[in-house]
Image 1 (cartoon, rainbow, N blue to C red):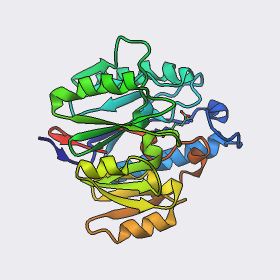
Image 2 (image 1 turned 60 degrees about the vertical axis):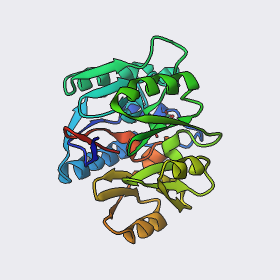
Image 3 (image 1 turned 135 degrees about the vertical axis):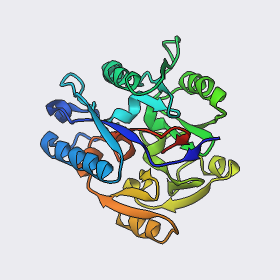
Length: 269
Ligand code: CIR
């Protein structure tokens, strides 16, 4: 069985000027330049923590391109699954990222031949040998079932988590460390997490529910100071604050800004 690890590599994608037209549930104004600077800083923090960061060229025709996590699921150091994003406007993001993954992994599989199957990477949360998959506006049961088929040969068990609110599963919960998950208070699925042996830390800040675990170092949004303080009390966790406010306006958070590749024999958040 593979072990939890910091990523060896990460792919990021710069913010296009068209980010001003990104999908978002509240039509607040977004500033692409500010968002770009925040993604650049995010990439610098990953690199400073020892992750080899590669940038996939961005595309002005894809306003949401910086949310690269949604277009693939990296299952281990050898295999990724390219997704079929639930939002049709995001499907053109998939081919260039698939090509970048093909240059770095032995295999990148397509999700499914069934064109009705949709899956966003933001709906997939790995906790040890379980993949929790949000059933949301973006990910449907056929998409979750296709991922389950791809993951089963690796010994990964898939648990669907029906959600009625929140964009993605990882908008309301994310891995902190092996067996430890932060969850937005009141979010569904907590019983499913506990049934699979996970410990749940409830947080009361929406931006605190999406943290990025890079080994003991855990990135926490600057919009979630109470979550940062709570994680600082967890043994073995080193939380670090990072400002992604302009990405929050586009319904994004920390995990969605990169695709992480573990070292051989490892898995990562
Ligand atoms: C979208 O609506 O698809 C983007 N504006 C935000 C995607 C955020 N992705 C993620 O949390 N994994």
